[in-house]
Length: 268
Image 1 (cartoon, rainbow, N blue to C red):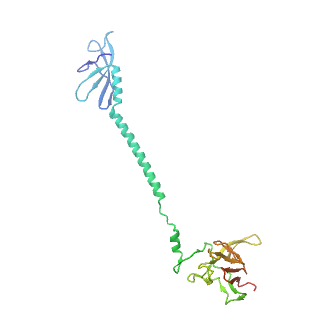
Image 2: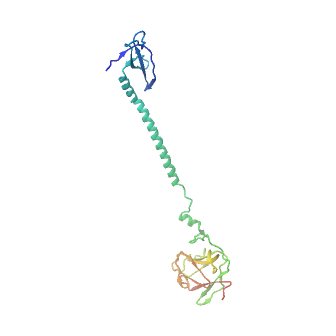
Image 3: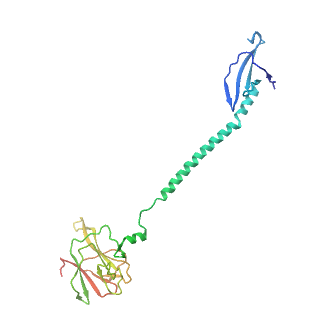
């Protein structure tokens, strides 16, 4: 390996580009040596590449061969300070990604935990109270007051009792033993407190000519009574609407009373 030569002030002309690596200044140069102040005359003139390393403020200058310059540059590029900066930058990027993910997860969790303004079962029951009694029935959206004057004629043992019950003034009528809420009380012990309901609903009906027409029709629904509701002596399934027709007979529980459905234009 060529031996480094120490110099104070370099001779000849220096043409160089300067690079900085970790606080160390590198200067690559070409010097022409020869006679007459280094002008390079004859065969004695020759070119030799060298490098000068400036070490901070000490003013120390070294002339190194090319292989030493290359090795030194490689060491500078591997400088711990540079690697540390790269690692810090990567850590900053990782921290930013982590923060973004945490923000997204927090937003998703907040969306899942949005308050629900729908009524719970208990609260819905509390809002469906009348005279201190929780009703077992809510009218459907298609509920309508009838446009025909329907009536219930009450029979017991084949005889008509009192005047008929007019059921055209409102959209539904509740039957049961609970007189605080029942529209038509049924006092027989076999009847439930809220036994059944007659509901008038607007529905679409096909006409003989094939056209669809909206009509308001009467329906009966058993509200889960203990001893059932009967239409023409047949028990109906609870919590389901059954359409009623003119002259149908309704019974509640084991009561002997019969309710016959007619209207103002019925042929008696």
